[in-house]
Image: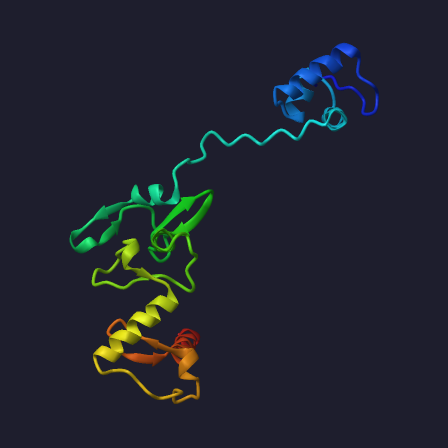
Length: 202
């Protein structure tokens, strides 16, 4: 077991000199305690008395230095039409494309959305609004507000736009109306309620 100097007992002049040199070199309290055989709290007390700031925590050697966009690019394969296919990891339950950024597991599509929108976080889940299932191309991804806006435009162009102000169950269209990929309007809340009922009956 390493020798330690009891907390509060003054250090000898040689130890103080060594401690000051280690502080100047940027050593942590733990490293100083290990090097000089003193208590970490003693090292911290002398650090404070000498006005030396806490040593920065070194970045782990295995921490990825790639930006999210660079890491994302490692796991995609370009296809015709500007589509990108995910070649990286997927969740075992749903097969959702995922990757790890700064120690956190995030979906590939949310990362792609951030890449295309100056790191703005998506609202709701992200889908590819193109004709290639599974596409993760940032330019093809939309969050819920963007998806609703684009599909509403499609509904208007294809003559499927609804002018009803609420659905059959009384949900306000302005808040609850959603659109399918083909522009067909439906009530998002009713759909969610139906799905919950189906799961409960299964």
